[in-house]
Image (cartoon, rainbow, N blue to C red):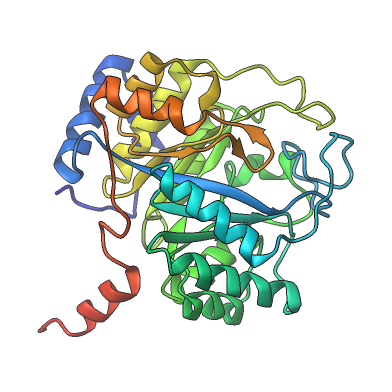
Length: 335
């Protein structure tokens, strides 16, 4: 197993990021093989349980109320609808089910009560239950943990320096505070970012530095590629070259060796051979299903074919143990 560090400098990360691509991928593959079952990939499914009408101004997001993107506002789904979607995702091979609501922050009301019921219902399927609901207070994180939430997604998106160019309705510190609240509640952390937001290589390195220097590395690190959507401020942004995605995945794998690195948004534009190189570089998690909230994504059958071609195997739910169980075990270990 690789040593975990929380004191990476930008210069150290840049030296890794700037290596010749094949050498970088080879090192990342070696790190991956030492810390994970090579060829094992977690399949996650993401459902938008409340769509559109968000008050935030995230420049990439079609669900922001201020942008005209054609996304129809939909009220919070019913528990039985979500449970049916989770059962379908499990039948498709998913071991983690993530529920996303287009909220700026969680409010203590009947909608949140219903989300708690959703978490309990999906938890009964023995799937890893994940939510992404915006900012959380410590008390709200505790409620989710008590309901059985396994993971919480809250991306930092980009570097702290570039953040204000993308979002002005909340701060970088707001993001980090929510991650701290989630961690203290004993919920595993899912946090990564998006490339293609007009950032520089230095911003990408800065984002990775933020994540790998957290007191505990995120258990899951999604690397998203911007999917430009008409009506958003970033609609005309150019597609990120494939090699830059591979470079990000490989660098994330080296600086966060125990984390799952998720090949997330933008995967629909990748060929099987391009995805294969991402897996070689250390990606060991994907989102499956025909949508990622509101943007297209490869269907389950296409991913099954890819797994067969590449010899990949789906990772079982809770293969790494529940974070709360780990915490209890650590408390009882002899000094």
